[in-house]
Structure formats: C-alpha cells, structure tokens
Length: 147
Image 1 (cartoon, one colour):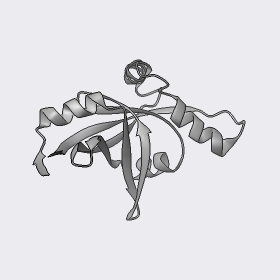
Image 2: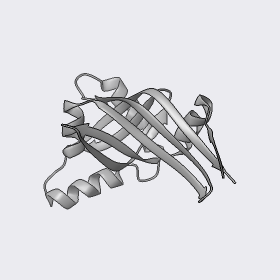
Image 3: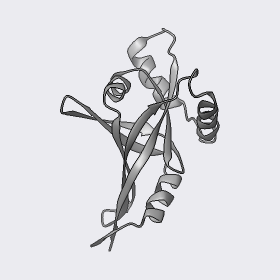
Image 4: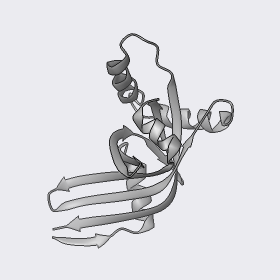
C-alpha cells in the first residue's frame, strides 16, 4: 500500500461528494467526536442539529474539526480532515445564511432525520427546536491509500 497526500482540490471534491462524517470538538481538554450528516459548499460545512453536548461545547470552544472517509477496500481509501470554526446560524443574526443552509441540506435525502431522531430518543414527546450551524473551514488535509 502506498499513501500520498491529497491536493486541496481533491480534498474539496471528497467533501462535496460526502454527506457523512465525524465532527470533533473539545472542552476542558476533553475531546468529543460525533457522527453527523452535512453538506459542503466552498469554505463551509452546513449541519442541522439540536441543542445538546456538542452544541454546548462548541459554543464555549468554537474550534472544531471534521473527518470524512471514502473507503473502497482496506488498502484503497481517501481521508480528509477539515479544521475550522463553529458558527451558529441564529434566525435573528443570519437569516440569509440559514435559508441558504436549509436549501443546500434539503437537496439531501432525509437530511433532518439523524439529528431529530437522536434528540427524540433523549427528550421523548417534547418539541425539539432545530438548530443550524456551519463550520468555516480554515485548513484541509487529506491522504490517499492505493494498492
């Protein structure tokens, strides 16, 4: 197996194809990683979520990362890590960005399902307010493994 770095363009192409990844955040030197569905456009990753641990942690420490894989076999895969900043898209401050995020997310099948199902598990029949956020990407790195 040979491992090579991906170009920035290859990293962008993988993020554009992908819809699932792992979001990393941290608080008080404790990392926290969660699976998320997302959509990527330019320098941003957009996500639907609900308030919980990851949101509370990202509000306190907005430094986040996203890891995305495309695995063909054990020895043929692509992996990208995007480092950046959490930006909550509140209705009052970011109405245009929220509308844009929602438009992008709605292009994906069942884009809302994971975030809402996870919160429903924890809160029963209580109504859950959705939250939109984006990650502004500061840097991208990626690797490719080939046979």
